[in-house]
Image 1 (cartoon, rainbow, N blue to C red):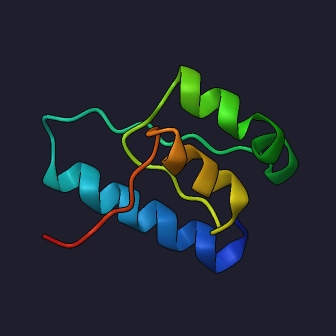
Image 2: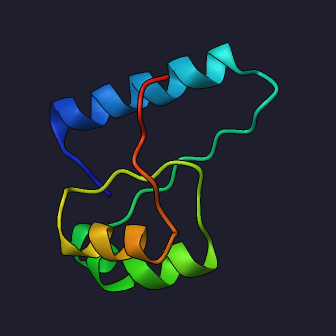
Length: 76
C-alpha cells in the first residue's frame, strides 16, 4: 500500500534494515494504490501470498486469517 511522507520513509528504513541483516534473502517490497489493494487483496493473497503483508485492521484481513492465508506476527 502506498503510504505518504513519514510512513513511507519508516517502511523503507525497516525494509532496508531487514535486507541488510539478511543478505541471504531476496527482499521484494510491493506497493499498491489503496483502492486497488482493497479490491484485489483477497485474490492476491490466495494467488501470490507473501511472507509479510501490512494491512489496516478490518474485515478483509480477518477474512484472510479465517482462510488460513494470513497469520498475526507475534514476538518470540
